[in-house]
Image (cartoon, rainbow, N blue to C red):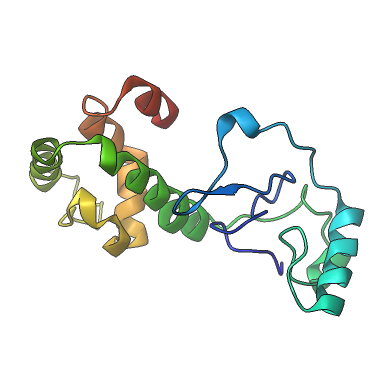
Length: 164
């Protein structure tokens, strides 16, 4: 769709939030007062980006898909890249500074001791601290099945409530 990656400025496909840099681009909750993206503005930003050869408002150019789909309402999201390899890794990395070494070791031990059904074709053989090394199947297993029960008692309540 010729948009900025999920971890860049103006990466939200739904709103016009620019984000702020704090070691990485983040979108603080208290600053979520931005307007929704509108298809026509996305097309104009894409044309401007092509002329200037730099992204404009998170848009890198005019995608041919914009002739078929109404952006952002009809954009098809890729679950594997967006959630499993993108957002889940970002969440875990944000949690790590709030966990003590012994807590990380306990979580890792719990994950290694998991006995999963035979039809789950993934073993959780990575440390939670190595989230950058996880494959999509590990992130999917974590977000859908094992993450909440294994980590909720270790996270501060405000973080745990956003994950739950």
